[in-house]
Structure formats: C-alpha cells, structure tokens
Amino acid sequence: MKFPLTEDTLGKKLKAGTGLSVDCLTCKRKATLDVAELVKRLGPDHGAMLWSLIKVLFCQECRDAGRDDRNL
Image 1: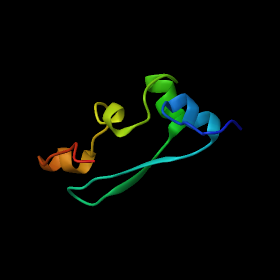
Image 2 (image 1 turned 90 degrees about the vertical axis):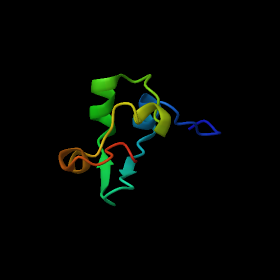
Image 3 (image 1 turned 135 degrees about the vertical axis):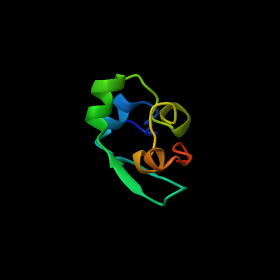
Image 4 (image 1 turned 45 degrees about the vertical axis):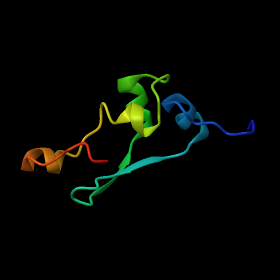
C-alpha cells in the first residue's frame, strides 16, 4: 500500500477495500453504500467525495415525503 493513502475516486476506494456511508440530515437515516455497484454505475474515475456524490445520491424516504432529499 502506498502512503499517503488517497481515496478520492470510487475506483481507489474499491481497490483499498474501504466502505462508504451517508447520513440523511433531514430524517436521520443512515445507509452503507455498495462501492462496487457505484463503480459499475458511475465508473472508477468518479469522485468519492461528498461534492461529487451529492449530484447522484439522495434519500428516497425524504423524496417520497416531499422533503429535502439531498441533505446528506
């Protein structure tokens, strides 16, 4: 493993074997994301930081209830 460890893309997170989770600040729901599935859908070069993922992630429960669904 090379240091410093940088996991700024989904591909790097998958290679490092680390996880990714999000918390909805509106309804307090927590979810652990499947990094391998995200790599399949978005590609290995897609950013793994909040400002990259906020464009594609949302809280389904809040969306269904008509609340702010991107308050992650």
